[in-house]
Length: 303
Image (cartoon, rainbow, N blue to C red; front, side, top):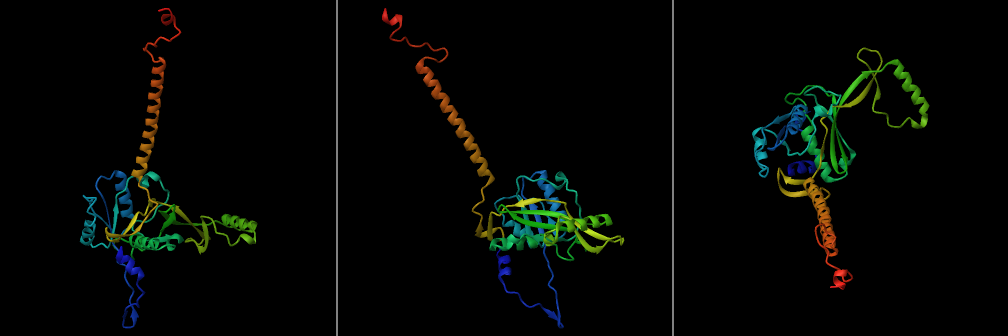
């Protein structure tokens, strides 16, 4: 984490040249994907989906410990990886269960689309750089194909990072659709020409068969998951805390508070029941209990 922060804070250096020709810097990012013990089949499906989505990643067996996370650095060096994606999740839904209609080529490179909110604070800039290192597939990496056919979107909402993946689908536009689009644009008027278009955008490129323009649409293919930033450490899985999310509440704490509230209501009902029984006992109204004779009864007056 500290190395990433230092690399961002450094001033850009001049590119190295060979015989006057600038040499392009190669992107050598490799990601190690693994999880902790005790995960379910849903977690395994999610790991397989991410492994298929990232051709520059390596997958390892489960980590036996949950406290000695510094061992992940040794595993990363062993597999020659400079990024680690470690999962210790609770509840997930796999791509096959969500039934997304889209699809993309296995091993293709994605377009990374970040929300403008990532530039509003330093810790979000750091998270953006980390996500770029992990999900940005280097050109010419292992098992990659020279195609870009899907987009990965990163959005900030409710102090959480929403990650979604979409297929870039191009289809030919018929003449009837073009006329309908032109008529709808004319009805909107000149004042609405600069508005954002709908989910399907029409481009001026010709289709492969030469039969007209093509329209580009985004269709979700998954996986879809949400990340909640909790803390950012200066080192890799260790070191002092440089950022902490004060608004984060552990799900275990929420469940504990719910149980305590239910227990409080149960204790209140129990106390009320005990008080009612005590009042009935004082009045002699309890079932099977003889009421003490009153002062005006015949047994007391004519005793």
